[in-house]
Amino acid sequence: MTNDSRLTTLARLGFAARGLTYVLIGWFAIAAARSGGAPGDNRAALGSLADSAAGQWLLAVIALGLLGYALWRFSEAWFDPERHGSDAKGLAKRGGFAVSGLVHVGLALFAARLALDWGGGGGSGDAEADEGAAGLMALPGGVWLVGAVGLVLLASAAGNFAEAYKAGFAKYFRGDLPAREAVVGAGRLGYAARGVVFVLVGWFALQAALNHDPEAAGGTGQALRTLQDQPYGPLLLGIVAAGLLLFGVFGIVQARYRQVQVVSPL
Image 1 (cartoon, helix red, strand yellow):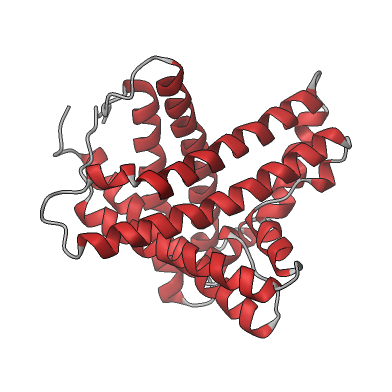
Image 2 (spheres, rainbow, N blue to C red):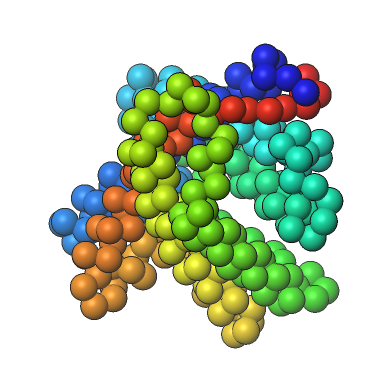
């Protein structure tokens, strides 16, 4: 185990890349709450950078960072450098790390296609969720698989709410973290906002399974639009969007000050 490795560097770049993505999601969702426009998802946020040469270079760096973050998550799932253990709770956490790794591989590939201008990078996250649900439902027992995805997402939401309440993430910061209370507060609000989004996305997946309708599945964009459509929707959307933006700032701080333990295969 080491703190000085290429994987550590990639993980730190990954925290920064993920943080910037959440800053963009939150920023555009706040704008949508104010204007009444439609909020987008992580793919729309990345796509906003593709209109200039500088943005494409930034997308290339983000793609590398997201891939590094995915590799670090896979390392956490397999090698367990932070000692989560092999009991039910530890295995659930490590399984969540593996799922996170897969998600960030997809985002990294999307960002890379945008950076290289390969066909615009693909569709929205909501369309991808529909397609993924349809693909799973085509398999034997596929409806149960989609339902299981929904339950995993709801469990992830519970984990985010637990982080917001307990602030367990604070123990991973170095002692020289400046403005610790403000950073921890931003993390709490950010995890709470992510929890709200995961509850909705998990619910969409469960509805898709219960109704045998893959088009009922959806991603972050649909979750934010659902909030927007509720009574006091602009206020609800604005609050969650601000939390997501704070989570992005929190992630950028993590890139510099989080302790990153790795067992590096590189």
